[in-house]
Image (cartoon, rainbow, N blue to C red; front, side, top):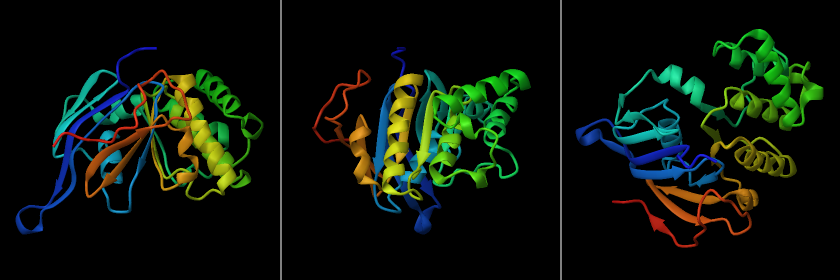
Length: 251
């Protein structure tokens, strides 16, 4: 497996407003995620988790700090070093609390459209979409509309769509919040399998502590500070050395 980190965030800071209205939403947050590694990001509401996720997802650039994805220097503070829309489409996959599937497209078409938007031919896109749905256990539902799928099936289709263009990183924001505990655990295990089999770096923001054993590394965010809590002792991964020591980010 390529040893280049899937993503490297270096001392990201995000400041909103100025003067008396200044709010520091994120303070010098650093994280390196290797290919095949799956990371949990915990923390209370308002702690900065979404700020961090949208920064590394190239949606809401930081005020300062650097972001490297797949070995490419993408952001230097708020300054993009390439076309972010094009780069994000090819290298970053997103999964949200709601599957956000297009309601009038079936499962296959929801995955296929992500490929076609990236200039893949319709024939090749259809083949890739069916392969992904098969790999994620929902190929038999490929011609069904989102309303005809269970919550867990919808999330599997959303994961397939996020993986369509073979991204370096997969970012998930509370992907199990609307699911029951059994289905939620299955989806978390799916992220771990995706990381291993696709060599994708995965970051999952979650409040669900019941499935933390599937993660390689656990971080917590509080008051904009990112702290590495531990590496899971229940999963063995070649991606990172395991450590139980808590180490705050620089600064």
